[in-house]
Image (cartoon, rainbow, N blue to C red; front, side, top):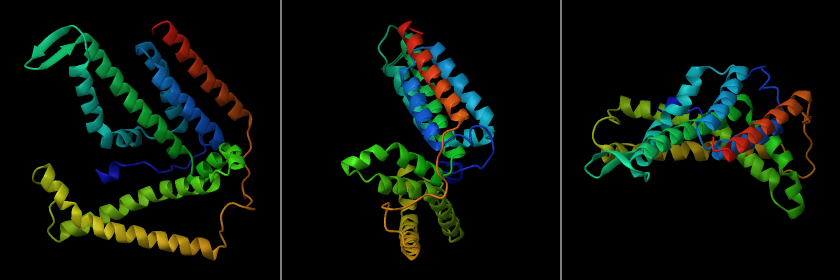
Length: 267
């Protein structure tokens, strides 16, 4: 299961999606999420899904990677669909004990599954096609007006970069610790849910020790390189918008406008 968690991973490439400015992609994701939550009916969801599939095709990310990103959240998706299926008000077409299934419940369950799945895949595409350093630079640039209000923009961006960078590393460390525990006779797969949760407790201590050790090593390395925050720092790669970024902005605005118009018509 841990190997299926792909959050924070970056897949290098030279596709049109990879070459976009990170600021453009961040704004693109905001427009995409807004359009997804404004979508009202299957026509709107179809437009957003077509857009998402186009982005996946242009980025050349393997469908297996996309499936792996959804797999860890499959239980949450199914649970949300179950709750919407049986607890959405409407005229029941089937009733078993206290569970009622209505036409509105079926529609709500399907739409909610689509929404969560497309939300996860769309946001993961941002990290798949953008390096953590580029994301940090893009976020810091977008939030730079807040510096006038003494908001710690650089520190916030740096923390996000470090968090994204170390998610795959901590997952790999957890997998190694679990393998070592299994070699010593630990059992993580048998028993009920409570027993499995208790079996994971011996993993937490070495994992926390490893995380704190890596944090201390990272702090030492940053101090050795004279890092003292964002004041007076320059960048090796200066972000610049290009024509493809302008075209992407137009596409994002077109998507958002199309979903708003379809929503007004109940589609």
